[in-house]
Image 1 (tube, helix red, strand yellow):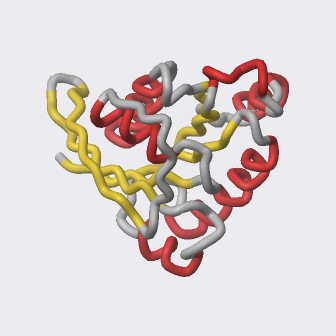
Image 2 (image 1 turned 60 degrees about the vertical axis):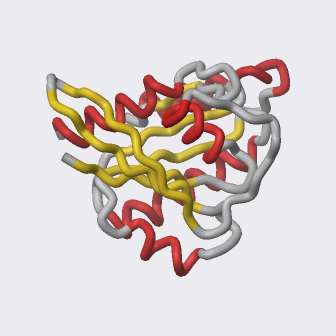
Length: 164
C-alpha cells in the first residue's frame, strides 16, 4: 500500500531535514533550499503490513503557492512544520492548515514544531502548543538534528491515515 503525504511550512523550518532524518536517519548542518518538490519514500510496518509513505517535501511557503495546491492533490495526509525558535512560522502554519483543508478536505495531519535541540531559543510557548493539542491537533516537538519526536510524528500520521 502506498500513501502520499506532504510537508508544509515556511522556509528554513526544517522540512527537508525532518524528511532526511525520517527516511535516512541522517542530519546535515548544511542548509539547502528546496525548489519545487523533493520526493522520498520510506516503508513503515503498521499492523503487520507494509505501508510505503511517499513523502513530498514542498518548497517553502513564500513561493509556488498556485503550484502547491496541485502538489497537494492525492495526498492521504500532511505534516505542518513550524520552527520553535521563530514564532511567526507557527502563525503561517495556522494559515496553511486552512488552505490544506480546503484542498484536501479532512485528511489526517500532524504538527511538528522543530528545533527542540535549540529549546532555550524557542519563541513558541508550551501554552500555545497545549492549546492546539486541546483543539485536537496532534502536536510533536521535534529535532531533525537529534531525531527527537520525528519517528513518532510520522508514525502517528501513518497510523491515522491507515486507520482513520
